[in-house]
Image (cartoon, rainbow, N blue to C red; front, top):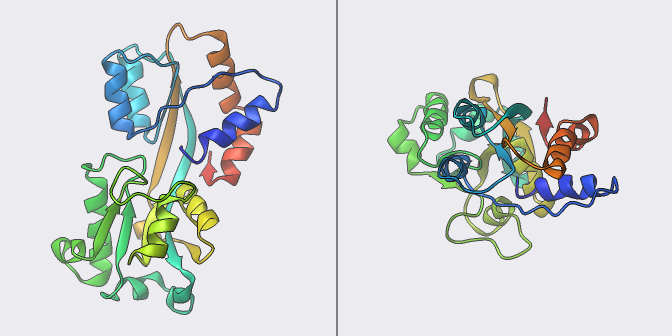
Length: 232
């Protein structure tokens, strides 16, 4: 959302809306916990509807909706173009370093190992063996961090030895925008996962927050989200 939300806010303000919006970013699970501890907020966008639904059950969100679906894809260096398909073949090259993005996910969730397990079935490697050539990338909450103005994924794939990256489509588009040496390919069905992004508004939120919430669910916002990698 660090890449997407500013663009959405810009489009919203172009409608003549005067909106003073403070953005706070972090892992969905961490933000959810802050809200449960009475952190002041108006809108909550999570990379999993699990978090928005949980807060709604506790009465901390009065309205929860699906913002969009973000499918996982693979980003690769264009030098691999001639051998990228079938993907199963390039994954079996044990000299290639694999990156898995934890954007929107809890870095300690079970999703990363499950992805590794599926990759391991293709490559014939055990998860511990595969882990040795796999790097979990948080999208900026790690060391080293990309310089100002650079996308974390695009920069890492340019300057460090990560040849293949599994990440959400929206993050892949941001990486390719930053690093023109990168390409995107859809994953085989057995490796395909998707994040259901949820959005909710707190009880008692003001009129401006309510208007922005409704706009984020509008056709205009959906068109922008689609261009940035989301489906509905």
